[in-house]
Image (cartoon, rainbow, N blue to C red; front, side, top):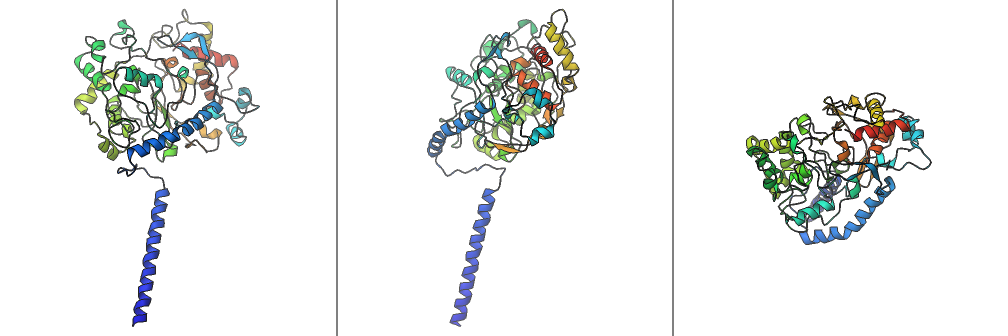
Length: 467
């Protein structure tokens, strides 16, 4: 009897042990799988996290900056004769580096399959990773961080990483503000960055009360994933959060970057180049891929979800600000809807060049734009967007590969962004991978198989600068 009980006890113990081991292996396996969720309850103290990430920062930034140097010519080479609306010089020239021994004409003569098989797709045409793609989150250019600090509105510095692209490839700062309701005033920013400190002084008497309240909300700090009061923030000190205009400075853009909130797993999330809000009144889709149908939808979505990587549990933890749709969201959208494009004095009422004002090169570029280059298939006049989404299928040209934590694979359909005022909005494409308009022309010359000549490329850039 004793031996039988011992035998069954040993069997039961062994079975239990095997079950525990199996459960442990299953749990470990589950931990390795990609998850859509971030941890809510953290066990590592904030100071330990911060010091660990600060120690890792130099290596992370070096790896990323080395990648940029490999992909691009990052030198400061401004155009001698083209400036943005408030005077900043535009960078010129193709900055994407070619594969060794290749020329643009040689690449243009090859099929997508040939470029793919020979691994000749230029490095700068691959999707651009976030400065730290596995981590992600909002990152602001240094000039914006310093201005917000100067106004006494907090510190948008991240302790774990810095912004990556050089300032000369970014929009001018501060950008001008043009209003559809008061075109006679020109730039109403008076050269200032609009914040909660000065919005009333600048706009009282110009906006109606609803628009003024909408602007107040657009410059009010609200909690966000990396900037908030909780222990899983990425700012050294607790923060009230960020404002809509911390990325869309003055209703335009400062080039701040982030990762899209609606793609998982992490390595497939797109880097975002903050788009301008100028001209949203003529747009019918919002978000690079979300295809939200109104600016009210987009405003509410950003506050409730995109600020927190699409995670409502994290949003609640961090203190999400729920906006009231019938008043607050409406007021914010009403102000955004009167943000106008910058003046384009060479365009007529149909959005085409006035021959009496345009140069011969610009007129040639317009001919190429609406003809051989087929740009107008997606970017028709007068606003140079068709308000649709298109799939360029760039993955035809390369084999999927991991680049600093970003899986370069298929991007899928992307919203057609307007080209009005495009010279004021570098870098280009939805993730900012193209630093200049010349880069953009070379990219689409290959994507569309256009076989443009050097003169046609130059003319196309001249035309887009006039838009």
